[in-house]
Amino acid sequence: NTSKLFLVLVSLLLLLPVVEALDAGDTIAFLLGLAVSVVGFCACLGLYARKRNGQQ
Image (tube, rainbow, N blue to C red; front, side, top):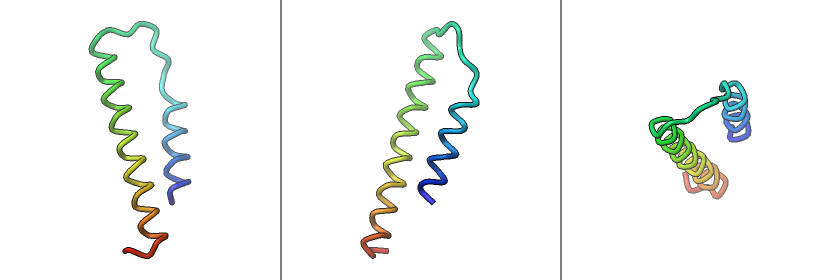
C-alpha cells in the first residue's frame, strides 16, 4: 500500500504544470503543500511500521 501511495504522489507531481513566475502567495502555498506531504508520508511510514511490528 505504501509503494502504491508513493507512486500516486510521484505521478501527481509529474503532472503539475511548470510555473514560470512565483510570487509570495505561490511560495507559501508550495511550502505548505510540501509540509503537508512530508507529514503525510511520515504518517504512512509510521502506520506501516506499526503494522509490521504487530502493534495494530
